[in-house]
Amino acid sequence: MNDTIVSSYVTGSAQMQGDLWSARARDYAELQESHFLPLYESVQRRPELTKSRSSLDVGCGPGLAAQVFSQTIANVAGIDASAAFIDIARQRLPGRNLRVGEMETLPHADGSFDVVTGFNAFQYAASPVNALREARRVTQPDGIVVIATWGLPEDCEAAGHLKALGALMPPPPPGAPGPFALSDESKLKALVSEAGLTPIAVVDVECPWIYPNLDIALRAMLSAGPAERAIRNSGMDRAREAVANSITPYLKPSGQYHLSNKFRYLIARA
Image (cartoon, rainbow, N blue to C red; front, side, top):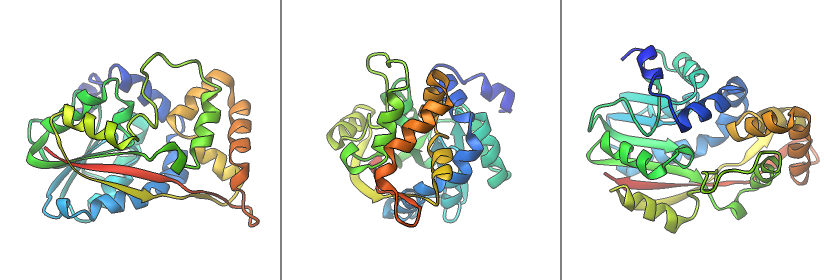
């Protein structure tokens, strides 16, 4: 399927999210994405994935998780709403199956993959349960689906900057998804079960965000989709000021900023 056809699938939440996350895609890829490396590597080492030969990363971003998985999985693929992210992912993983598309209508046949992952992706779907059902559909019977999300707000020092940015956005519609929408373990397990998946294990991973100075911290933390929404609503100056104030408690004597965060993932059987 060529890119022109695939792009026609980008509707609903994907159209909005793709636009937001594309705005500062290069900054995200170069300054922010590496902070999630401990999460990607933890999933890669799970015994449930040992025999996997094919994987799909839903919401693959610039492709760092797919790069990690390619070390042990022969056939890696990815899909993301952001064309800018897919361009970067293709540079990192030439010749791989990387597409622009919608996570709720995946352009893949039933049972195409041994494992399907979604790192901080499914909670942004218009209907997370539908997105998970699609993930299950394209997973082989008895295959693995991994749902990774933020940990609880009290375990994430970066939650403060999200709250600060939230004050600069228009009020969300009732029931709108957010970064912590799937953080509660009981809600996460219930959603997975509703999608027809069987929960196996929940794992928390420390992912510290460390920046050498304020300028890098702001470029990195303002590169994500929610930050772009705040910028468009209230302006870059106000967004920079809000984030700078929110991370002041995490400034070290060296001039570095160090924010401790826990991210969480659930391993499920299709």
